[in-house]
Image 1 (cartoon, rainbow, N blue to C red):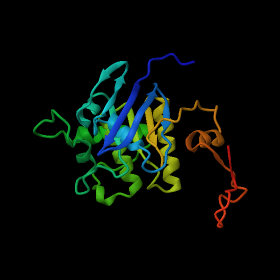
Image 2: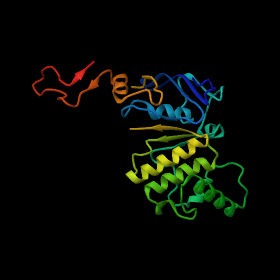
Image 3: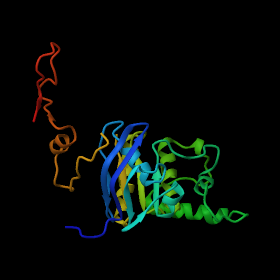
Image 4: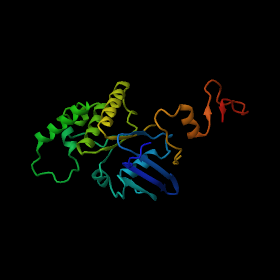
Length: 246
C-alpha cells in the first residue's frame, strides 16, 4: 500500500452553475509518478473538476491540498505557481506568433530585451528530452494539430509544471500522433511527473488500481449495469429490454 502523501488531494469538491450541479462531493488524489484518466460521458463534470484544480473556477464547497498544504487558487496564475499546468482541448495559443513567443506569454519578470537565443535553446532542450520536436521559429498557424499540441505541452513544461492536465488529449490526433503522445506521457511519468487525462454525473463512482479492474467492473460502477453486446439493447415494440443485466 502506498503511504506517500498525495501530491494533489481534492476533498468534497462541489460546483454549481445557475442551479445546475456540475460536481458534487468529489474526492480525488494524485500521487507522485501516477497517470490518471477521468471517465465520464459529455457533461459529467470532468473538465469542471480540472478547471477548479487549475484555478479557472472556484469551488462552491470542498478543499484542495497540494503536497499536504491547503490552497485556494483565485486564477490559473496561482495554479501555475504551484506547479500545475493544463493543456486544453482547444489549445490556448496565439496563431499569429511563433512557438518561442508563445512559450513566454504571460510570464512575469521578463527583461526589456528578450533573450531569444536562450529561450530557443531551452525550448530545443525540452523538446529533445521528451521527444516533442518543434521548430521554435515556426508560426502556430503553420503547424499541424499534433504539432500545436506539442507546443501546448512544451509551454507547460517550459513553465516547470510537474502536474500536467490534458483535456481530451487524443480527440484531435491521428492514431500515430496518439501513440507519440502516449510515449511522451510514459517518459514524463518515468521522470516523476504526474499526468491527469480527461477522456471523452458529476459524482465520484470510485477509483481503480491498475491491474485490478475490468471493463465490466468499470461499466457497472459507472452506469449501474452491464451491456451485453451479444444481444439487442432494446425492442422496437416497447417491450422489456434485452441485453441488460445486473
